[in-house]
Amino acid sequence: MKNLRHCGPNAGPDGFVRRAGLTFATAALALLAGCAQVTPPLPAPATPPPAAQITPVPFPDAVLKAANGVFSGALTNAPSPERRVVVIDPLVNGVTGEQSVATKQIQEQIVALARDKYPQFDIEPFTAAAVSKGAYVIVGTFTPVNAQGATAGVREGFRFCLVMIDLKAGKTVAKSVARAKLDGVDSTPIAFFRDSPAWTADANVKSYIDTCQTTKVGDPISQVYVNGIVTASIVSEAIDAYDANRYAEALELYKSAEKSPAGKQLRVYNGLYLTEWKLGQRQQAAESFGRVVEYGLANNTLGVKILFRPGSTALGTDPQNNSPYDMWLREIANHSASGNACLLVTGNSSPSGSAAINEQLSQLRADYVKGRLESDQPGLHGHVIATGVGSKNNMVGTGADDLSDALDRRVDFTVIRSC
Image (cartoon, rainbow, N blue to C red; front, top):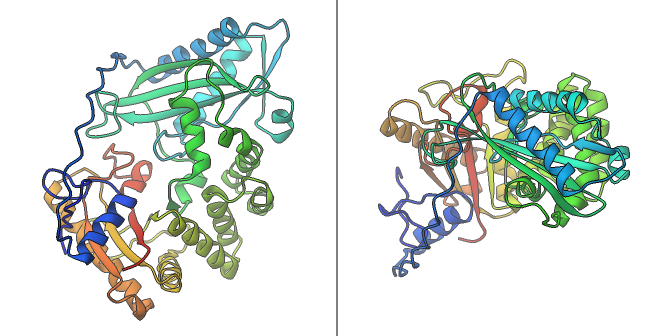
């Protein structure tokens, strides 16, 4: 089935499903049920006023603009005679939640600026001990966007949001935004995110992103973010240890994070899998990947970086990770079958090259994965639908075709609870 048509209110004008997750699930249910009745379209939403244009500037200038804005804003909005402890909860891509070389560089530049120009702030490492002091916390997102500032179409710059929150007061005390040019930005994910096998919407990551992007000065802090901040500090230490190849230390930190109140999250499960795999603990790694799958399927959709050879339906090879794709597919098949789930398998591609060819290739790859799942678990026959959408569901969208946009070439597994 090359194209999946949908007759519900979530279909696009040409009848094709536009979004992953529950929209795909709705589409597949409609397909399986015959969808005999067309639902009247929902009223068109009111057109929002055009956003103020922010002129993109070179990357270092954008960082200085946003950082100066947030430090000076905090001094104005929350004056205090005391020096303030500040921690930086590592900045992320506002869509994927990934940290990158660029976000690390931003953090280093913020620390240097505070040291040289804002002595009222003491920047400390992001640890549970520092958080327990009731520190101020800086969060930020750095996201590829188009000319209108949206995460769609051709990306022409980076939208940069920086926020400072006061844990004691429980509110946002400063916010600053800037727009950076694409030139000179290295958005390659750091090692942990580069190696992480899977992505799904995670409440903890979403609360971080919303704390930056949807709040204004004076707003209360998201309770989900506050409840998870100690866990986030442990995860941050674990990611640093993983990136430094200290895998045994990272594994212990991920185990500690899992036992904390907000430990049931994808970064922890990805971290357990990665460190066990690096340490040669193959059986434990397979079990941890199974938990990654369970978490994703419980959230109705799981994007897995099953990467193929260019222009081919043959699985790629990863010398660093010994190509664990066979184990991944087996665990996905086993957990899907044990839950008696129906799956929509969606192939994705980056936007480079011919759109028609990319869509066809993504369909063939989805068909291949469908066949592998049914081979591993024959009980899945009749419970798996395959479709290819090309680059329509890109999360990064830069078309770089390298490690920086690997998530755009993922395979999505979307659950239909009954069929």
